Amino acid sequence: MFSIFSRKTDANNTESTSASTSEIPSNEGGWLSRLRAGLAKTREVLNTDVSDLFARYPKIDEALYEELETTLLSADVGVKATTQLIEALRRDQREQKIADGAALFDAFKRNLNTLLAPLERTLDISTHQPFVIMIAGVNGAGKTTTIGKLAKYFQREGKSVLLAAGDTFRAAAREQLMTWGERNNVTVIAQEGGDPAAVVFDAIHAARARGIDVVLADTAGRLPTQLNLMEEIKKVKRVITKAEPTAPHETLLVLDANTGQNALAQVRAFDDALALTGLVVTKLDGTAKGGMIAALAAERGPASIPVRFIGVGESIDDLRPFVAADFVDALFASTASVPSASTSA
Image: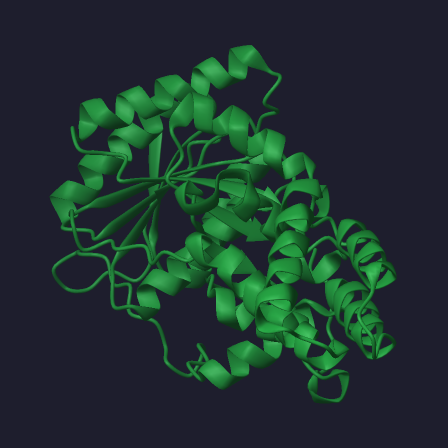
């Protein structure tokens, strides 16, 4: 039997999803500070080592490039991205006649920004109502927490939200999603056990009847090698399309930044199964492997699957759209200007 958990309904029995402005900091400067703090561990590798590296070489030679390659690989930037960055840097040095390390460092940051730029694409949810977002990922990636944070993000944008507890295999996942529903004052469609596709189907019909703007559909965590479970998630997507022929309008894969280069294999497997339209990179505050975002960018270049959002902390407001220039700035921010970071769960 389905259960509908509804919070804060108005006199017309419709869902109230307005968020208290006092709960949600809207200051973008505050977000940039949190981003810099959240990338502290990666910055310890990239900023300290890279900036010192360029400073130690007043005369540019092959040793600089060799050290730079080692440093980038240690931050999980990956072989492909590292090769692209160093080739671009050599070209800039040659064509622009760069002679000192400081100028070459500036060129490196520009090239990194250029590499990451294709990942920055804004998610437009105005094209359909309800706009159905299917969310997948391996166990432990932070998928359910991401859904709760996305709900708050869309509420901040003035949108109403409904959650579908499609992970029916884990009671803890359902309960966690219900907790996020309570925090965000949104409805959660859930079922104890049973067919996850049926839960999502019911949620889409409920959203349509209530005039909801966004449906966030959770799915059971699975490894790409679990072929039976990958077939199950394909079924969920097919059922979503039966409930709403144009849906899902966005298919997101949640990636734990701690997995580093293994994220590439996850992206390939889930993309083959679901035709991904976006990625969410979580737990960047708990790892020195933040360079894996560059590896994602290098994998497909201009045709990269966009990184829609990144997460850098425990706060409900610590999930925001990915902006390449802000990310690069945070990686190479002055240590003195960065507040201390706390690691998320």
